[in-house]
Length: 148
Image (cartoon, rainbow, N blue to C red):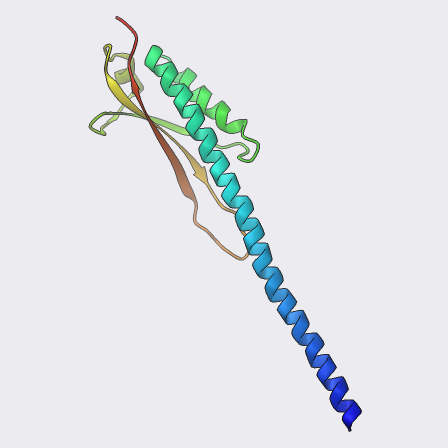
C-alpha cells in the first residue's frame, strides 16, 4: 500500500514539474520576443529620427528637393538592420500645425519655419499576444535658408 502511494506521489510531482516548466517557458518566450520587438521598434524610430533630421537639413538648403528628402528617409529606414523594409510617409506643416504641400515649401521665402513629419507603420509580433499596428512618428523643425 505504501509503495503505491509513493509512486503516485512521484507521478504527481513529475506532472507538476512539467506544468510549472511550461508556465515558466511561456513567460520566458513572451519576455524574450517582447524584448526583440521592443528593440526593433526603437531601432526603426532611431533610423526614422536620424534620417528625418538629414531630410530637414536638405530641405532647409533647397526646399524644392522634396523627392530627395523622401529618398533620404526611405533609405535611412531601409538600411536599418532591425527594421527591414518599412514604407515611410512624409508630410510638411507650417508653424501653426496646418498641413501643407511640398509646393508650398518650395515656394517659401528665406526664413520660413516649417515642420517635417515622417511616419512609419510598426507591428509588434509577439507570440501569444495580438498587438494592434501602430505608427511611429517623428517631427523635426526646419528653417528655409536659401536666398531668393
